[in-house]
Amino acid sequence: MQTIVGVLRGGPSREHEVSLKTGAAMLANLPEERYSVRDIYIDKNGQWHNRGRVTTPERVLRQIDVALIGLHGEYGEDGEVQKLLERFGVPYTGADSFGSYLAMHKLMAKVRAKEAGLLTPESHYIERAKDSEDAAHDIIRNFHQPVVVKPVGWGSSVGISIVGGYAPVLTAIERLFADGAAGVLVEQLIRGKEATAGVVEGLRGEALYALPPVEIIPPEDDFFSYDAKYSGETREICPGNFSRVVNEELQHAAKVIHRALGLRHYSRSDFIVTPKGIYYLETNTLPGLTAESLLPKSLAAVGIPFQEFLSHLVSLALER
Image (cartoon, rainbow, N blue to C red; front, side, top):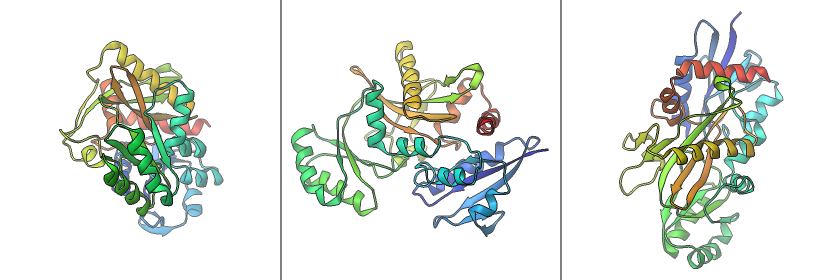
């Protein structure tokens, strides 16, 4: 009897379109001989759809054996959909609700990373919009300019800007609050090579298998912004041009933060490699799996077919 796999994609986040592509890749690559696949679409208003018809989570979740989560950003990676799946007792892929929340909250993730011994950029957290002006003054006094201004809880580099000077910093902070950010994190700008490293549990006989790190080379005068991620202009080299020592340090750091955040199944973490050391930036608990995404490139580099990876994730979810 085939396992019924529900692929969740779309969702009410700023990464809706990317999630559709990740979900499409999942739907196209789940082995038909092993699984009966359901395309579960969640629209931008949070309404669930099954086979093109409006439905409720309760109704559709009763019809599947396991959920393969292709959602990104809010609702998908912040623990909300995971809480729903846990409530209905449906096994699912990726981090549980608490691990998802921790990783998505960039400040909390930084705290865990520091406790685990990883380097992180110096930062200033602004919790309330009314504190923006005072915070901007503090940032100008205490940080070399420019700085990185980012929402505390969005993914795919959405909303991130690199700015310097009081007026630009204040404008960037206020814009994020106006767009609905729950808080704003301002970080020291670390210059170096951008890298990302993925890990997968239970792969090739290892409790936590480290994939080869990817070196990310954004377009000149840009960082790995949302546009740079999906425009095709960024160069992504896998395995990256790192020394053996740096390569091993990146893989070790990806394992350390996966465990420190209490994650499950798989994750992909972002770093900056500098002469002073490797700085941790953030972790993706449901990294993109589109044709342009980084994790599939790491899998291909070590000869792991995408179909095999998806089957492995489903097996991990069903084991628990």
